[in-house]
Length: 283
Length: 277
Image (cartoon, rainbow over the protein chains, first blue to last red):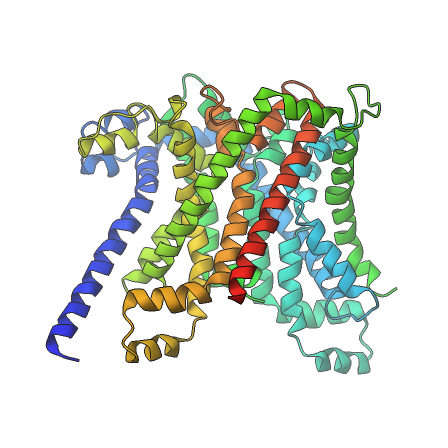
């Protein structure tokens, strides 16, 4: 490679990096504004924009007052409800989906592929489309305003079953046969061989279940009316809907609501990107 | 039956939370206000109502603008950030960061940014552009929602496309470079053809997501101003909860589902046919 070619490749590289930095900064900007706003008095959030300066995005006198007032109000109940509901969804969802994936991979029986196809296609019906009739059923049987109503529709998840099944299919059959020779039943094979071997897939599955529940807005809106049963996104929507909204509190609540999944998902980033790759593009 | 105990909980979930309400949706959509059989009356009413024509128009416009825009940007981002390097990898995480922001939070954050004295106008002002009405203008509101949705969506779809880019064998590019192919030519002749599968996935999944958009509308615009953001998912909700017309809402929900399936099938066909060329 001649000297001129090397230097033009180097220049291209610098352009790429500068462009990458500009793009990333653009995506980050609203989040910086959100966090900055959560750390300053609500009255300053909009006044600090005129004129734009470094002080717009880095509050000169940061304070946690918004966080304590947000967590002192209705938002705290919402946050606790959201955490309880999301955690229960993950635990129950993992058992339900892993058991189904196990029956659809490790065990061999007639009609297995048909049942699997039925699973995949039924869960392709978007939750949003069936939410209205489903909420009417829940109201009729008196499950409105209960944790059960918030949790159980999210426990069976087609993508999670699909993902776990893919992983289970890769576990060698000889392990099953060896365990059967030792007299192990299906339950023991499931609990003592498949689950321990599948930790990465289970983490990825747990993240999908968590995120689906944490993002939910329409369903909680339909099945909860009592203030003490509202989940955090609904509470947040109500806070913003008031005419005299305190944006400091709203920004603090928003920051908390985004920080929790960010910390959890970034902590497991490797598993999450794996799950993205496994659930979608690859066969 | 050995598999049944393992299968039963998921099977019950499937029946109770998908198939049963889907069946109920169909039944409701064919019923009158007293629950009597009404044939296709609801659908007839729906398709002759000017308000539904407007809803459908807004929804299709939203999908037709949002999906190509997000796919193109996500593809550009994937090309920019696919490589693992000390600088690019952390930047990629920053682009992905909005994905963690729940849609309710994103709606509220962008709602604040779009206010007359908000961040968006402050940024435009610093570039010398006059203040824009954004969500309070019938001609800008839907586009403002698209920008908001893309802030979350592009980083998410980028991750799928990066996964696809990593599967392309490096020696194809090396061979092309030896043959004297430039960057653009390898992009056109190697990258894009080999990315057809992941791109198809992103287009289809993004189409579904765009049709089902709900939280930002419910929180920010409630369909307004002047019905310009009356997207179909919000309209269904409004029919059922504010106008108490469950049968009409069911008919509309079912219509949404059918339109979505038809469009996704067309996309699949087009994208898989191109592959054979």
